[in-house]
Image (spheres, each protein chain N blue to C red):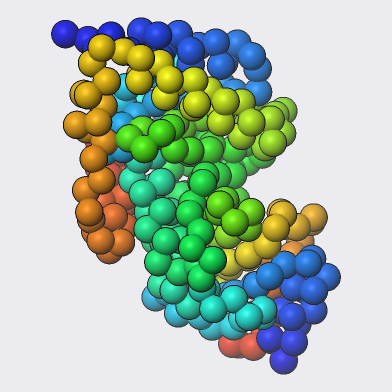
Length: 119
Length: 160
């Protein structure tokens, strides 16, 4: 059910992959067939955390997301959040930043919460 | 003694700020030593150390996972409507810039990329460019070590 909702969001926003990742770096739910996500997931919490601290050190305040722009033209976006009551990361892979990113992140969070009983 | 490229690098960073769209910039070596900075980017030494580590972390993360043999070109951190972007400046340096509140991401990235290319040329033309190479050699650290390094530097920055 969760992955159906994620898949619908992935198609709507023309993304390659959406993944909800636990604080331990494990993929909890995924839509899209990006095999690289399994390798990236393990380090996503560390990168998201470091991005947050980077933002504070740089005087930017509260972070919304970190993005890695790849030489292949794809963007890997990482958003640190709470998933089902625990720290986690939402990862998006695509060719451009989706419109309405905040609303989309909220929808992903709600879908994961509903599946895992956190919301 | 200050290396001969420091002053022209600082002048180029100050010119970058005058162009608009960018509020602060820090040029650092690949191992996190600040070379030059302009504007208010927090404490430049700490920002330099974290920028180099964050960029290396991005390189290691992407290098280990993408089947298309991708590289991490840039890291963008977005917060409260503003962005900080980290990009490679040649093989041995990194440039961190903080965008102005009203600047578009494309404008920030474009100006940062052009400045990075010019900064590389400035250093390459200087008589003591070897100093940068000495501080810019890849460390060969594992991904776990890089993560630990970034988090340690962040904790030190927070505590210090």
